[in-house]
Image 1 (cartoon, chains in turn orange, red):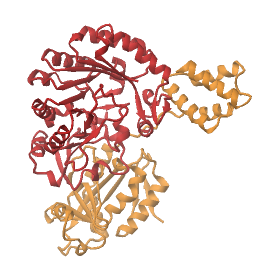
Image 2 (cartoon, helix red, strand yellow; image 1 turned 90 degrees about the vertical axis):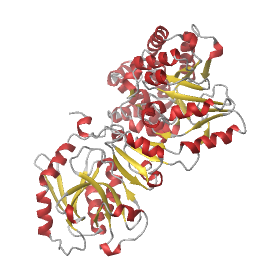
Image 3 (cartoon, rainbow over the protein chains, first blue to last red; image 1 turned 180 degrees about the vertical axis):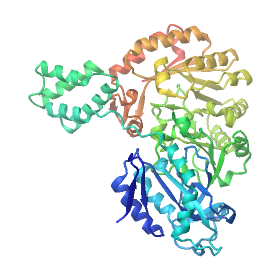
Image 4 (cartoon, each protein chain N blue to C red; image 1 turned 135 degrees about the vertical axis):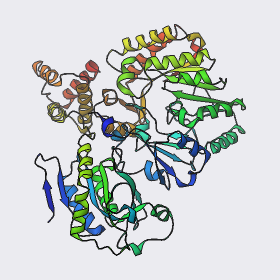
Length: 254
Length: 336
């Protein structure tokens, strides 16, 4: 249904959104995120073209805000990575430029803004999957809206190709972007232990928190649990016996 | 390669509410950040309260928001706050968010972001305080939702408050800090009714869990500068944090403090163990899955998490016995 290419080392995926408009953009972004994105690890870069000032034709920008003309919302990607690209605002219009509203905040942004049809839809769709810190919008200026230039697949390809070095430099710099660390995984050990003490849901929660803490202090939990086995305390004969073991751990280890 | 190679420095972007873009305070703050990129916004909540933010990444590169506070400015002190026996105890939220990133800080549970909002309409705060002063004396903490002294080079707010308080004897202001700010005390005049409260933690805690804050040595130098220049100083062993070997760590801390500053010149000392509302703890734990200090299996009592009653008594009792060697009990406030 959609085209996805991957780099040889699997670090980089290229996902093609064909066609124009927010509906296609939202649908394909939703597909991409639901199927492939890992929260806290992946980054989404929306690379595309936009209308802008004639003097900026061919130039590529990193967008610091994305204004959705349809809803009136302004979305702000964190954009805290270093970049040599100039920064600007992006305004996403529902259809064509003649549908723009003529008053309010939008008007104030307008002079410095680029215009596309997809950015806001992509932000709104992708933000729950990636977070505001892992979304980037790179837009190359293809035309000025009313300058009579036709935007064709070939002209867009040329435009992106012309900016390939800048785009790849940006992507390279993101390879060292901080990852979300979910911390050590003690869930299997905690689950097994909970089963052995016939834990209730409340006890399971206590075990999970206790094990998380003890693991972070550097304690060898596996060895401790083994020692409880050696003492003949595990598996506990019933929940009451299990409660006593947990109580003993709280007293001994905290 | 570390994060500073990849990320822009903190405060290199400033989001400015359109309505206050031309205010003198905004212009003064921006003049101190000449390299910053300015982004106009409608309302600070459009940036500060955005959904799907990741404060763990934002902490590595905090950005600034300048705004006008149009809602509540002065709040009654929260139940978990030490009131120092003051009947009319309030706090003001001039800044939301902190330059520092302490693993255990409640602000991480309170705000969805690591970015910092400075409210530039400080004169409105002064008007609110004057209205309160018409009703009763006011004890006001101005550095609860931030570390105001750490931002003094940008805002000058502490100095403004000192000037304001100097003409209002019924107002007592507390400025809590973990900053290294000796210079401030060497270049300003003290006011009897502006108290500087320094939070102190053992070296091992400060270096592992109080990211960006002044080192223990730097804080002690600041305290000494404050005392030498006649500023009222409070020491806060609050929150006390449980770490393996906590007794030795807090004994060493007390010994270091004794050796560094004239204890008899302290206004008072505050002691309390770590406590936090249950909603905040949940959020903070998500942000610090690898921080033992916040993953400790606390006990929940009436919606607040803290250590067991036994552990609380043990820790408070220990440091109390240490502090009583230097200060009379009347100068020691306990949160229990």
